[in-house]
Length: 149
Image 1 (cartoon, helix red, strand yellow):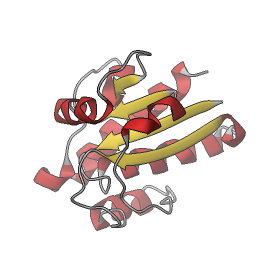
Image 2: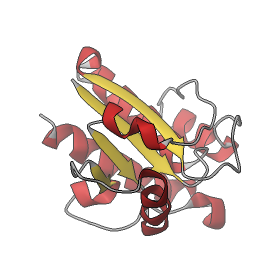
Image 3: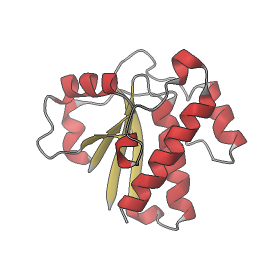
Image 4: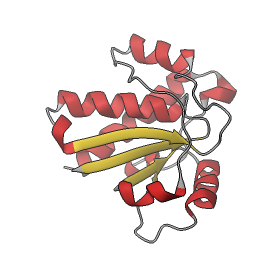
């Protein structure tokens, strides 16, 4: 069983996109019973809000079902519940480590570091470019699924 938690700042754009994409990739691979997938924020700004309309629109345009989700913040005591805690950019990592305190089991990684193109996932909150975010998230999730076997 692979337990994956995707992390971004508000949990309405990138992490919910990754949660939806990974959930669908796993379903298409017939491996739903091998994974538990969720997402969370490092901030409290969007708590309770649904995925951003830009994320929803892009996922629908790409034929990816949007998971039912409301923004939530990760809690320190969740660390033991996840095999992989995957963040989107370096700011997310700094904020995540403030919450978690440490990563003794090396569970924390950046999504695009699973690919041959390491770096930050484009943040559509600032750019409005959900196409770039889609490209990054899809590439990261495909690489993650492949490397997890």
